[in-house]
Amino acid sequence: MAWSGRLVHRGVPGIARCFHASSVANGPRVLITGVQGQLGAPLAEELRKKYGRDNVIATGRRFPDAELEASGPYKFLDVMNMDMMRQFVVNHRIDWVVHFSALLSVIGESNVPLAIQINIESVHNMLELCKNYNLRLFLPSTIGAFGPTSPRNPTPDLCIQRPRTIYGVAKVHAELMGEYYNHRFGLDFRSARFPGVISADTMPGGGTTDYAVAIFHDAIQTGKFECYLRPDTRLPMMYLPDCIRATVEMLEAPDEDWKLRTYNITAMSFTPEEIAEELKKHIPNLEVTYKPDDRQQIADTWPEVFDDSGARNDLGWNHEYDLAKMVETMVTRLRQKYGK
Ligand SMILES: NC(=O)C1=CN([C@@H]2O[C@H](COP(=O)(O)OP(=O)(O)OC[C@H]3O[C@@H](n4cnc5c(N)ncnc54)[C@H](O)[C@@H]3O)[C@@H](O)[C@H]2O)C=CC1
Ligand SMILES: CC(=O)[C@H](N)C(=O)O
Image (cartoon, rainbow, N blue to C red; front, side):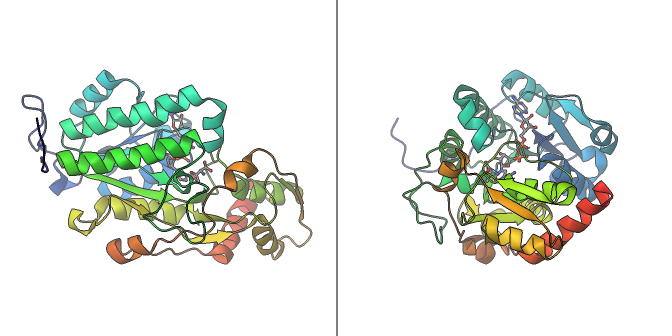
């Protein structure tokens, strides 16, 4: 069949839902996958404040800890199991999916076949599921979706994307597939390329930017930090509350505001040397040493400064935390946590 236009898909006949009692007018019912990672539980908490505790279903593959269990509904869900996901979406009358399950850049390189399954095959499952049941899909991308031939300072929304990690390749695939499903089937696909995310309560899951979280824990507990990147390695970053707010705002933005299906989002850009200097304002005796390892090769191919003017212009994105405010807040939070 020759096809030359846009087909707006309205779901699979016979199984597509009509808008049900919990339809979006009364607040959406949201499914979050991979909730036991760095971003999942904080997003669930924020969405529950807005849409109600029981309207946000946190899912993962592990036993929930006591805090996660007490915070609202948690269910087992393996994103590789399409039958299970279909049943889940129907039984829980889901409207929006936030697909967080992934292997991050460093873990992905250590198990490429698994990264292909989780970061590519599960995305195919999600796209089909959301197309067939007419669901909104938010699926984050990353600064890692760019590579050594992309402009690195600044990196715009639209430029060459030839990443050198399986994580990056999978994210470019997801961005393009989401855009294609939007164009071809009318799928409401939304994506943000996030920079390294820095958080106080949840730990990162094996990425290249993890040092920017680890430095706080080590500095406050021991006064020392050994960094696996060179002191001058500049990378885009953001503080978790900004990342969660960006996600919520992007989920809620009217579809007509989306001129692209994937936008760069950032808040700041710094090097290990610069964050160490900022931390020394709070911990003057901090000693930082540098021992670059394989992660340096990944960082050297990623953007240094991210141009997120598209999201600022089209979606009204604005960050709240710069380097000084983020460092001060992290230090306060972790001093309380460690009783220091
Ligand atoms: N944290 C960051 O700095 C950034 C994160 N992102 C993206 O945001 C999303 C969430 O990131 P994080 O929370 O940091 O990731 P994370 O690595 O901390 O958590 C990922 C979660 O996916 C789960 N998972 C793995 N296989 C699964 C399966 N078969 N079924 C169900 N769950 C499975 C893991 O158990 C884990 O809880 C990811 O897509 C990531 O690429 C993008 C840019 C920056
Ligand atoms: C920036 C990311 O996507 C993540 N934190 C990683 O370093 O892999």
